[in-house]
Each structure stands twice: as structure tokens, then as C-alpha cells.
Length: 148
Image 1 (cartoon, helix red, strand yellow):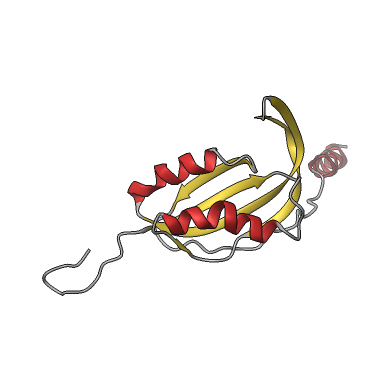
Image 2: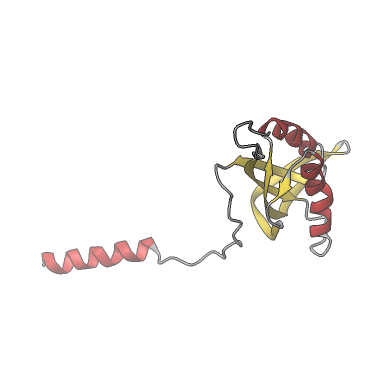
């Protein structure tokens, strides 16, 4: 869109983040190429712009996900989790959603809108936290010691 007052081009595209689970049947080494083929090409074809390269991590799923593929149910307990930032006109997002739903390699996905550019951060490893039970036991011991 060009404004008549300033004669400068205004970017009508909004930032989004796409979180997705890709089938574990795709090997880790071919994953970046496949994601570019499966997801990136659709974003670019719809006039979108990739903000950063996708990041991936193989994960164990919290619960098994069953997907109907080729007339039979596939059950997944692991997947490649990925995240991708992009910009696109909001009117084109439903078309991207429809295209991604038809891709058999994508188990699940979620498109989140943002009001500013989204930082793409590496996935953090879970850290161990002190046991809540140990803290409660310690407090009980302290209370009993002061009561006697």
C-alpha cells in the first residue's frame, strides 16, 4: 500500500509464529529441506516472508497422537517439534492454514499472531527444580522444633 501524503510504501504484513509437529518418519538430516518444501514454500507463495530459519527438536510426546493417513490410523509417540517466524497479510493466513492441514507430514500445528517481530529462541533444556515435598518436610521439621 502506498500513502499519498508521504509516498512511502507501508508493509501490510503482520508477524506470526508457526509451531508445528512433523512426523518422525522424516529423518533429522532431511528435516530442514522438507520444512522449506512443506511450509516455507507455501508462506512465500502467499506473499509472506520468513523472518528466521526454522528451529527443530525431536521430542517425546506427552500423549500418543493418532492421525488418519491413507485410510489407516497412525499413532505417534515422538515427533519433530519446530517453530518458524514469518510475516504475511492477515487475509492470507486462512489459506495457509488450509494448505498446512492437507500436508500428511504435519501432525499438528498452531499459527500465533504477534504485534511485533517475534524473537526465535532456541529450545531450552528442562532444568531440575528442588522437590516441593522436600521443602514441605523441612518446614514441618522447623515448626515441630519450635513447638517443642
